[in-house]
Image (cartoon, rainbow, N blue to C red):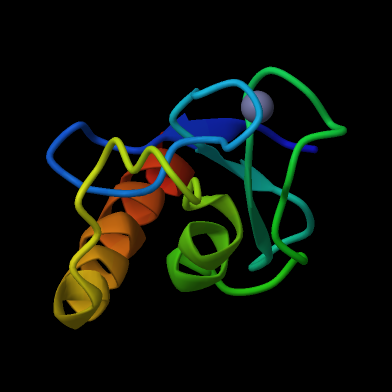
Length: 93
Ligand SMILES: [Zn+2]
């Protein structure tokens, strides 16, 4: 684990279904990222690979209490935005 970045508040995404936290993006290996809950390794996290917000959202949408409106048509915009954020972080390293 080399570090993590927080997802900007302007990006709409599902919160952790267990504790309600916004997810973070952790670096697994070079070029591989995990979208995960910041509070517990036991809460849902995506498989290492590309940043998969869709997968996170699919697994964390509460059945009865959706707190954030996830618009499926906008996920690709978010992906590009997040990629930009990660490039910035790697440059700092
Ligand atoms: Zn959680």
